[in-house]
Image 1 (cartoon, rainbow, N blue to C red):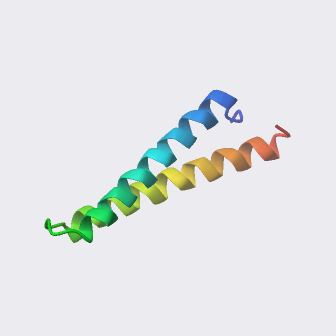
Image 2 (spheres, one colour):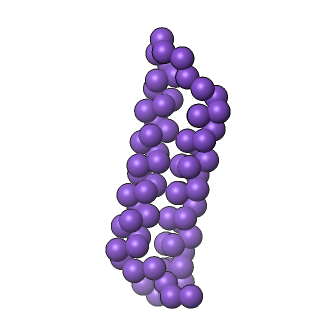
Length: 67
């Protein structure tokens, strides 16, 4: 398997940032008067964790390849 290129790392960084921001916004919403869903919170947490894990794995592959 070839290591991810810089453009792939950038895509994964953007994906991870987007997932993190959505989770943070939903957490902030949970403090407000509008109802929120525990299920939706878990979905956003899983999306964030998955995106962060993919980014970490890509960075590790890049590091292992000497990039």
